[in-house]
Amino acid sequence: MPFQRIDVSIARSPELRTRIAEAVHRALVETIAVPPDDRFQVLTAHPPGALAFAPSYLGIPHQDPVLVQVTLSRGRTTEQKQALYRRMAELVHEAGVPPNELVVSLVEVGREDWSFGDGIAQYVPAK
Amino acid sequence: MPFQRIDVSIARSPELRTRIAEAVHRALVETIAVPPDDRFQVLTAHPPGALAFAPSYLGIPHQDPVLVQVTLSRGRTTEQKQALYRRMAELVHEAGVPPNELVVSLVEVGREDWSFGDGIAQYVPAK
Amino acid sequence: MPFQRIDVSIARSPELRTRIAEAVHRALVETIAVPPDDRFQVLTAHPPGALAFAPSYLGIPHQDPVLVQVTLSRGRTTEQKQALYRRMAELVHEAGVPPNELVVSLVEVGREDWSFGDGIAQYVPAK
Image (cartoon, rainbow over all chains, first blue to last red; front, side):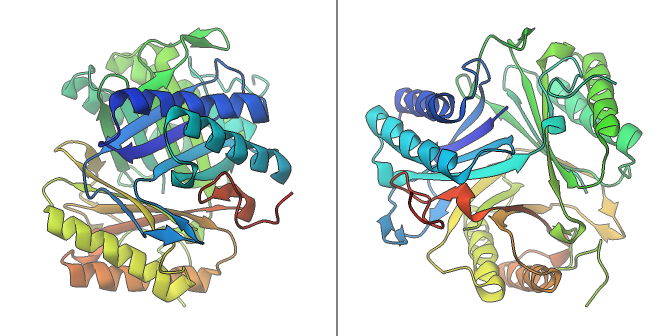
């Protein structure tokens, strides 16, 4: 159900990028009950200049941010989202990225807004 | 009105990618009354490793998914969305992609959330 | 708070792309009170064929569109969005892009849908 876009600098190695993607997915599984097989990630490595950002925002410095945007079904509480960010920062840190660099945004959609194949909206009754 | 992002593996040929993009757009036109000229698509071909996914989800296998995310104005019914997924899978299949590989997510926005050029919000009255 | 994706043709020079990104951000700052340091942009330059679009929509011609998608917190009025589009078209024009080419879509989210680093949802009270 979550569709995950992860945008990083190409300066981060392919191995690190793979670990980042695993960390982001694992945080979703651990904190907001995403099934482990519900993994759809687009991980894009960008050339220099393609990621534009300020040196800091709200007192948090950014030198090489990892930008994560997750589209997910509505219904998680603010507490669940806070737990998600916290765990994602921990796991991304374990993967090798300082937690200040992890920038996350969520986009909520309905259960009828998904099809996982075969032209079917799997999360709503068939009509 | 729909803004379409299509993410595929670079292993899919440029010709196939073009056919996929046409199929996705045509499904929108045929099922949810998108004007044929209302076509804005970003089709990205990703290197190996950039698309991360499980071998199957909800019993549907994925080997080389075509990930389609459509931002569109609110107001379609669940039935219309179901017709959209069904037709898109048919047309993508005709284009050369097995229907199990088509993964779609929709993001709904307001009519005031669009500008198609010249700095104007064409879908709402001018102020 | 806004997360900005900008998709352009690779035919636009790196210098122009940088100016476009600055123009888009500046329009957000000037019209909808985005803090200058709240800048998170992904600027992708696409090869030929990756952007698919009709030659015109609603009477506005497109030859080489600049596709801007901004995820932002809910709460702006339609008038503010109209001012945003108008100013963005002006600034992108000053940067060297004809205003008809600027296509914008907005996606609204909640204040709890953001983390700017350190695993914290900075826009809501800590729990």
